[in-house]
Image (cartoon, rainbow, N blue to C red; front, top):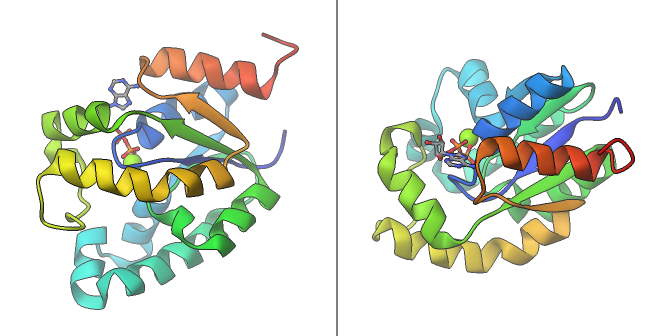
Length: 173
Ligand code: ADP
Ligand code: MG
């Protein structure tokens, strides 16, 4: 397979953690759209949102998605990348899209345990569990729409990687 693998899902579902492990296993390069934005602009997601608003950030993120796409890469995307239909279509057409699905409670516990790893500003300013449940409800159908494969992301990273490999190469499993 020479097309990229896109990891989609809400904040904390493991796009970076599982994506890096998957890339290592496959011998693929790993890229993270947030990291690439930071490298290209010298600014974090929070800083871009502060100066240009969420719309400005989303436009830059969409450009970055197209810039990094292609080749033997695992690409971890931002949680809101699926909001644009053009992004959902682009990912589906140019690679394999994996949705890491986890219940809001699991995501909230992870983000509360390691808040410093998540640089994204709050979308609503409300408690994290409440905000996650609401965001998931609004985006679930979009993640499903973008995805070729939906995985249970509440298992350990090793188990999630194994499950992805079984989906990608059903004959070899
Ligand atoms: P994302 O990139 O989707 O926002 P991360 O990979 O940064 O998510 O993971 C968020 C936090 O959850 C990190 O602290 C990470 O160690 C932890 N984590 C990720 N995946 C798992 C998993 N499958 N099981 C347990 N903890 C996980
Ligand atoms: Mg990440």
